[in-house]
Image (cartoon, rainbow over all chains, first blue to last red; front, side, top):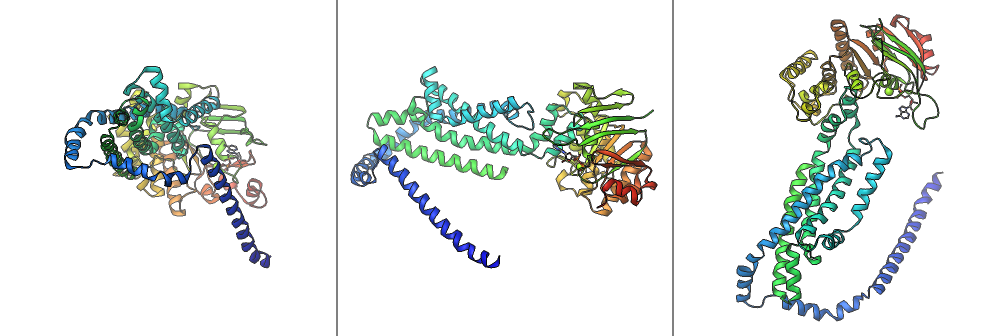
Length: 273
Length: 249
Ligand SMILES: Nc1ncnc2c1ncn2[C@@H]1O[C@H](COP(=O)(O)OP(=O)(O)O)[C@@H](O)[C@H]1O
Ligand SMILES: [Mg+2]
């Protein structure tokens, strides 16, 4: 027994080494196949590097007057589309969070005892979550036309699904003790939820909403590419007019905005949980 | 007249191979202090959860104050439950909330849903909650968070929460199993004092034979879902314990 256990580790390590090699080969094979299918060649990246450098050169404003013009004249004109981008993100997040609440109740097995209703709600949230936001946006643009409205709709559906899924998982993990105690005292279902469940999950819910807001700010900057409003529509316009300097300023400002919101939101979330 | 009559109670949990309760008969007279003993898995928790209808029995009768409690539904079921207080091994408080908020939850069976929804209690409810806290020795702890209290103090909060229900029966599911021996004895003494002074009937599951002997007016021994002993604590001797806990115990 003792000799066996002394022999065992090298054997497993050999096994692990072989497994690692196999996984590595599998990953390489998948990468190769994908690269072939998408006609992506690392060689091309190196060969056409000068094209990228040239594009970067065209994006970079080359004299002081351009910089002054871009920052004092062009940048302020981006205020409205940028605010619209934030508004899309805020509205989509808030509407999604509110709509998520009933689904949180339905998709938590300790609040919804009917297995059919529970399974249906869970499945719906999982299904809605698998569709990418930009796909939603394209669908809603097709349905209601160009502009910020389809963007808000897209983010609403997506936010609702994520917030409902994450929150219902937290609800299912709450301490069941207080629920039982209140039920035993003759509390109604609504009272049990309001007093035994909400206090336990509210900080988590808020943190999930903030997390989804971070995602939504990111997404709302590119919603314009499919015609769903916001700063992305300006970026799209500048690129199609070959106004690369202007596009560069938009990208730079987007980067600053997203980073600032990520930073602030992460700080708040760290305090919540 | 008996406060509670249980007849032929059978429980089978979904997916279980055998019954958790196999025909339990039991009568409680007002003012009794009954302790239920039995090895773990005997069905002690199941029995008291059937009494306040947290667990649905497969068959059997529960007669409360002369009325059939098995037929109760909806608002009537809630009104039945609020007459029965319950305390637990793990206290089951909402840890994030203050002590007073936890105690006021004992009034949920009485306030209208919209009152509770907006968190409004009348001055009378708050006064009762404060009185109950004083009664369990926690005057001045109203605004402390439940999670900052010791185990014994939390169980006292849970008792206060049950008392504001103005219950006619108190159920306890091993309420002192999580406490050190000195604190456990103090909590049992508090329950005994409430039993004597208010005449509140007690049905308390215990795993300590000594505590049952010290505080009960009557002991029920449960063994594998059946009543194996029912009598005064003075009659709980070695042979009774062997019957209840099996020869290993
Ligand atoms: N929720 C449940 N689902 C399935 N079986 C259960 C459940 N609760 C208890 N049981 C079973 O019922 C029997 C009685 O359990 P319980 O009433 O908790 O006993 P005790 O409180 O005396 O330890 C045990 O065999 C236990 O495994
Ligand atoms: Mg038990």
